[in-house]
Length: 223
Ligand code: E4P
Image (cartoon, rainbow, N blue to C red):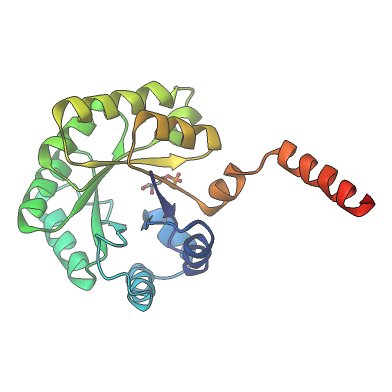
């Protein structure tokens, strides 16, 4: 299962790449805002970062960039997606999983512009992505659990449907918040998770590991 970083901050991308070997980046308008840069500067800087690492395109290091969330019309989404896609071969265009977004993603995929249908909260939305042969689909696990829903059967259901239907779209488990969710996604057979840097850092911490290290240090010092 691949790890993507959910961030538009270059220092975080650099650290996550060096430490955890992340395989790609996902962004949304909140991440762009958190980068402190205007939209174009933020996405161009990420494209330059990838080019400097010789990560040539979306196959080697996909960077998901979301269209203007105010767009409610497929033609407008397509126009904006073409502009973003022309900036870098790393860019995969993130489109909300609403009716015009479904239409836009189908047009774009036929043109060879890869898309990531986002804000997915039901298996039937995920089926629409699979049928459209989008590169990615992004079910949001953390948001569901924040609202008292269990994300495990949700992601298992999408993974099962994709297997049975032989959809090629890769599942990005998005808004992953905990190590347990990471394990649930892996067990369900999701291809990718995306999470913030702090989630990856926390995911391998265990108090027994720390306690064990203290015990071994004490033994080492007394030997
Ligand atoms: C994923 O592609 C989304 O950008 C992300 O996971 C959304 O959730 P968050 O910003 O609340 O983490």
